[in-house]
Amino acid sequence: MYFGPGIVTSEKQEFWHGELWQDSLLFGEDKIRSKNEGYYRAGDFLLCNDQLSTFICRVRGVVVDEMDNNTLKLKVDPLLSHEDLPNCRSDDNRHTRGNNMELWLVEGAVKLVNPENIEHHIIVWLHDMPKPDEYNYYVQEIVYRFDGRWKYREIATRHRLPCENITLTSSPQNLPTLKIFLDIYVDDFGTFRNVYHSLGGVYLQIGNMPSNLRKQLKNHFLIGFVPFGADFNDFIRPVIQDIKSLENGLIMQTLYGDAWVTGGIGCITADLPQGNDLAGVKRHGANHGCRTCNVSNSQYTDLNYNYVKNARFQQQTNEHIAEIKSQSSKRDQDRLATEYGLIEPGPLNTLKWDQHIQTPQDPYHSMAGKARTLLDATFNVFNTNGENEFLKHWRIIEKPSHWSRMPNPVRHRQSFMFSDILRIAMLMPFILKRFLKSHYIKTEALNKWQENLGIRRNLVVSNLQTCWTIEAKVLKLAFSVTMTENNYQKLQEMLKKEREILIRVSVKYSLKVVKNTHQGLPNQINKSASFVDHLGDLSGEIISDTPSRFKDEQVAEICKNVSEK
Image 1 (cartoon, rainbow, N blue to C red):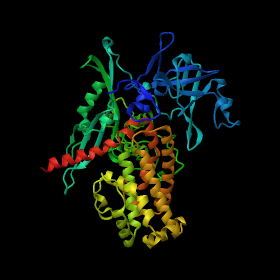
Image 2: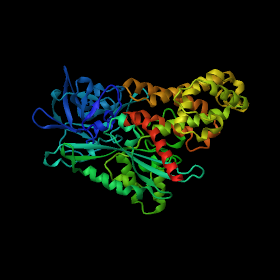
Image 3: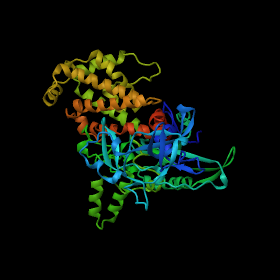
Image 4: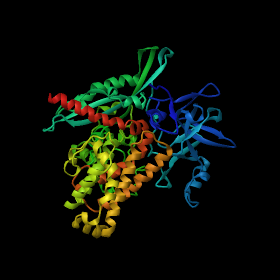
């Protein structure tokens, strides 16, 4: 297992390659010795030199630069003065205010700095924090890039660094420190074949294990099952107490002697409704039912919605919860809860974690669920001849030899596991290319497409084929074993194309399956918007551990068989 600083590498595959491990003192390193025998710590503001110039930065954490002989470096966010600001008009008031004391924090432009290149500490006041008695500069705006353009937002709308909210107990007796990254996975499944009784499975993985070990079924540790009708909060409370003990630290015996063991929740993964419950957010049917941002359900298909500026931030959520609890009447409490899209926080809220960052959208459910919805929508527009022709080509198309035999996807796809859905999604572009013609599509569908979107009949086929080609490419990139910066950019571009074409050919077409299901395409399209952000935060969970979610289907099958026997 790996215990050490976060690693910056060209190919991300493990949890320690992700932003969360690199930035959090619960898992990585937050300080490095300075030239004057002091320390540079996460959260410090520093003046650094870069060849012939100097710049001001804020430390996020200490990382190992794998691309520079595993050198230990500081990971920093740069701060800009007015003359260096991008996309800044000459007639705005930014160049006149502040008496040259104002700086702008740059988001998403991380640098790695050698400790030897640091000049000294400086004091910078962030306007969303208490004002210090003395300071050299202040920051009240963030500069960030969204949709290809530089934009500005208030400093209060930021994800604070873990060091701002977390304090750790020092290791006693100078013992070596081991930090444990806990990955908890929650999912319900039907216990019996013919009657559905939901049984909640709660599993644990140790994020310090490399991905090849986490994928093994024996390394999926079962915490327990939430019985029928039981409250998850009651079930998880004893587990929370153990995790809090781990956060505070304890001495344990290892093969190499005593060690100071600490750590905590790295991420909690669940499907769409359960993930919202764990994050303390109303479910997706509510007006504000996204646990990542504050989008309303009427804006799910708005391509211009700024989910970065309007993200959910932990400090704001805590303020909203306090405001809700301060209301004297139940009616006012419910009104505010609906306005903010929040529910009463559960016991997980007592842990040292950020529920909006560390409860990612599970790619296995969100991506495969979106593919299933699109599959239903596609089959719903086929006429009888179209279904028969699809099945003819489905039977004869070349498939990998290790795939298990699947039943008729037109008639029995509702019984398919997500792994089956993903396999069908990979084949759909090739099957549609081989047989689909406009006379295999229902006349009603063709007329609605032409009426609502102005798409001529001969272009409907190419639109469907393009839609499935983009979907297959997105799935391929999303479930890659490793990710590079180039892959990130490609995935971001493909997700944008996917959103555009799904809105064009499905949402505005008003397919029945989109309107009548809580997992409809508008909601799933919105979840894709923040997918790449979670890739960077939890690269191990989203990238490496996604294949291991297929193992949970095996766990569910084992439990079903045991229950039936």
